[in-house]
Image 1 (cartoon, helix red, strand yellow):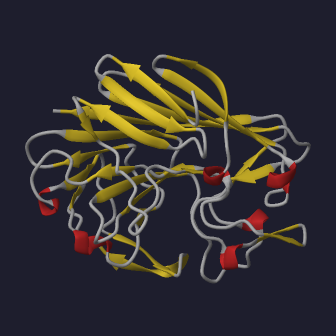
Image 2 (image 1 turned 90 degrees about the horizontal axis):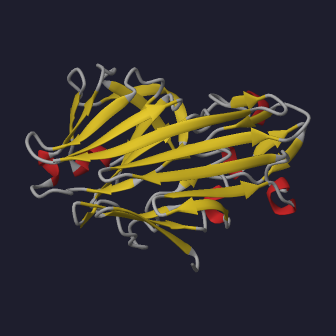
Image 3 (image 1 turned 180 degrees about the vertical axis):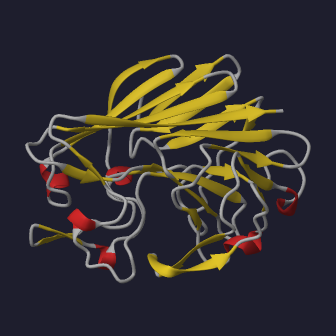
Length: 288
């Protein structure tokens, strides 16, 4: 088995690394749809985010007066997961609290990432369980980088179509932290034309988005679809020199620029009661 799990369903295939439970490949209709890492541009392909999403102030959080070095997107993406179950088209990977994790995040958790492959789709479920005796603040997210362009044409011929009309402005992010200001984006109703220049500054973050689904593609031809359950925020991110588009699903977000760094009051965190668990699902599809 090695360090990679391979799934197959008919002609479709996927590869998932045990390190970080990261999706490394998704092949549909004979072609790769996931970005192949280029270290000089973006060294990841589809990191899983937990127990925070985005940046924390100075790469730290404060919990009950103690500082913890909990940085960008948390630690799950860097740690080895355990394979808890699998079949030809399904795999469940688990990360549990350890001495190492408690030095960063002092909570007793179980974090499961479950992949299920179909002929033209991929379902990813994140499940968080609190095994401790106090409420556990957390955020989680998915950060897949899709090839762009993925079905011919140029970058500028692609667009995002949200299921609902979204506000044509996004927060201004300064050094990873959210300010109170916004900047306009060329969104008309639910349609957002894409270009490399659109991502020259930072991610486009649609906080508390109305849409629970979106489509990524050209006016005619193949489309990647995204359906979300219990991920309130949607972010779009790329690098001008990278031919990928990351369509991110978040439960939380980065710290406020004027925030205190107190973890218990960090914006958009879920406070999971003792003994409880909660699941968040994204389903990616491919239509042609």
